[in-house]
Length: 178
Image (cartoon, rainbow, N blue to C red; front, top):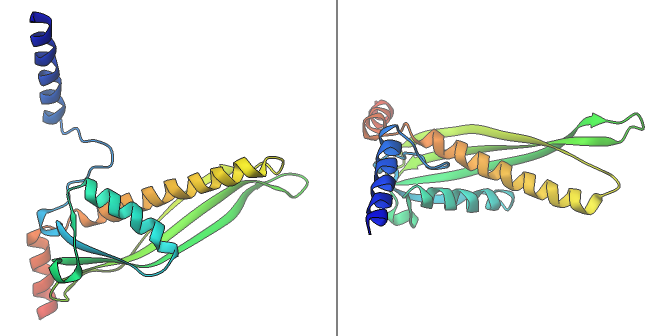
């Protein structure tokens, strides 16, 4: 019984210390309360995977994804471009390392059609090694790299939302009203 109480006390102290120092779980971001009623739009098939990743990350950050008519704000992924280029080439002119880059453009619009974020762009890139003798596993590796890039891109988009608290949004609305 004493050991159990001591364990519970130790866990409580650790939790208190971690919360006091500002510790957050990886991927969690303090999204302002004003943005907690959000609708998410994707422009094309390529951005669907990014939107699924965004959907998961927003939900983990306590954002309610709702229909347009119930949303205070609409986050739209207007374009997503993906490219792959050879980074390293052997003396036989065979690519052994590739770099994959995804670049997303997005908007954040209030329910009253005020543009909060207009055509903001962010990108993520990652390299991976390619072995021409082991094509099947390298194709899987490329898919994993693309998945990681989408997670990173979604995190970057979400982090771009964090400064938009009530005061900043009101300033933007006031500036657009003039």
